[in-house]
Length: 291
Image 1 (cartoon, rainbow, N blue to C red):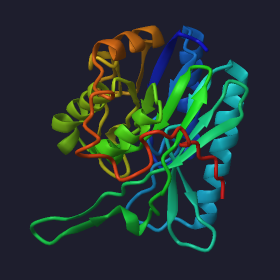
Image 2 (cartoon, rainbow, N blue to C red):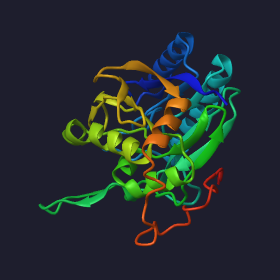
Image 3 (cartoon, rainbow, N blue to C red):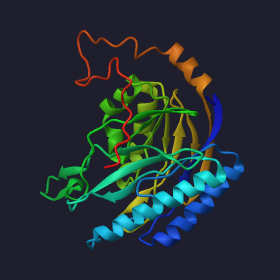
């Protein structure tokens, strides 16, 4: 296992033009690899952001997803770099909703892990207006943690960051680095994005790698501020609100030093409280279901 390596967060401007989007990602991933990164992380809906104003045919979504998977696999193999593909929408056969899927490719281009976003953004505002992500996205039902030569990886997507139970479950399953790709709006991101990421890193003694969308895209004015946070809560790398790439060193020895100093996972009072899942003693979080 690599104990120390460079990771990159890729922050693109993503539109509803998949050709332009993939061209931009190709340039950014190439730059990351040529700069020495062993890992590149992309944001939520990294390949295309579909407008709210029109219904997209499932065949188009499927074609875009398949094309993106081939594209990321080819880049990972070409540049010998591990790529966390952020997330892409993938249609579900026989259902009008999609999966919001996070995909991990090893440095040979193999798809080695996937995760479907568990928490969908479903709210009713005081004025009665509803926002229901679950109308278009079917929530996942599995936690994903997987071993790699770069450490043990866990996966979350955007709104998932607001649920510490998910992060704690992954930490108890041994996650060293947790990915949280996102498309946060400026309205919430300017106040919540960084505090949430730093809190999740601190309370679980893990790295958090969070690539985000930026700019005024087809759905919202996105917050940007992609970042890499270490287990002490220090922001090691950060983008602004323009397309960019930021780099940081992941040091698993540093991770272990912090865990030795702050033994919060060991000091939990599970005689009084516990997670309502079998995370306490299990490392069975791998999920490679490609149905």
